[in-house]
Image 1 (tube, rainbow, N blue to C red):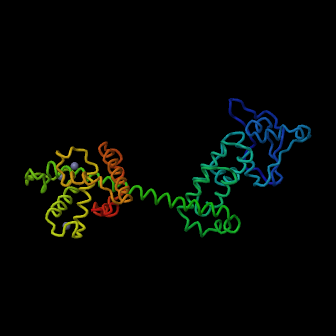
Image 2 (image 1 turned 180 degrees about the vertical axis):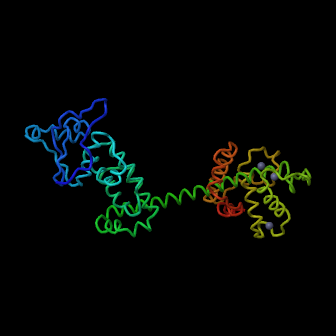
Image 3 (image 1 turned 135 degrees about the horizontal axis):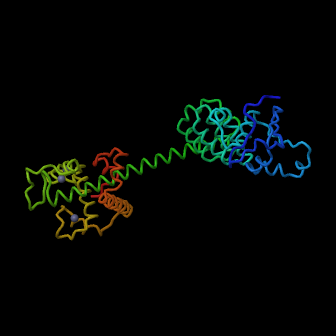
Length: 357
Ligand SMILES: [Zn+2]
Ligand SMILES: [Zn+2]
Ligand SMILES: [Zn+2]
């Protein structure tokens, strides 16, 4: 018979010591170790053990033994000790964590299952993650399962080299497929989040460009101003000067370019689209808006030629309006800017606005 590693079970909870109460059954391990225990305590800690203890066959038998086989004797002993104390030390968890999880699952001991899940999550490595994943799946431990999947997904190149992965490939093609699908899903979620953030960043840049265009054409910035007002040479750069500066150059170019839009000038086309975008979101009465071409675009707006093109444009307008509303509340813009390196306005316009002039 193998030797015991923990002291005999003693329950110290509820201010009642049962040390003196005689044990009335034995747990039998696969190494033929007999662990003395109290039927009442086991029954109160595990509904599965309770139903075994209460079964008519056990009631009649002279010496009551409950076999817990298939796991190391020491793991069973630590398990029984947990049923008494609700505690398991780090050293035992380190040695028998996976066995204890299996026992907690089979004998329905949720507190132990929670502790094992936490401990195993903390001890996940590239080497053991595939084995722990299989166990988590068998023992219905969703937190542990998810954590294992994430570790495999993040470190797949290294996991692929492990014996655990090779064994899984040969023996459990369903789980292999499940893992590969999870990795695929994670990758496509990452891509779509990245794309979404880039789009949001673009809409915020366009919204800022709209604010600057309005400000340049109404109050005037450093070098460009409304037609009825001389731009002040002494004016200090405004708070959004990085955007205003580029816009002022583009407006200046637009006004003086010989090729113009129809001559195929890309820079003029971009400026043309910004004027058009302004007109699409402009709510000022025609007579008061000082942004060039605003009225012309509003009048031309009704003559739709390409419906698909128009639908894309409408979507862009809606997104920019939404970004403008969010900006005016100064909410998630700053957060977005931290997450994404904003692309240049020119790049943004080229990517999302088709030339329709
Ligand atoms: Zn400015
Ligand atoms: Zn030009
Ligand atoms: Zn306008």
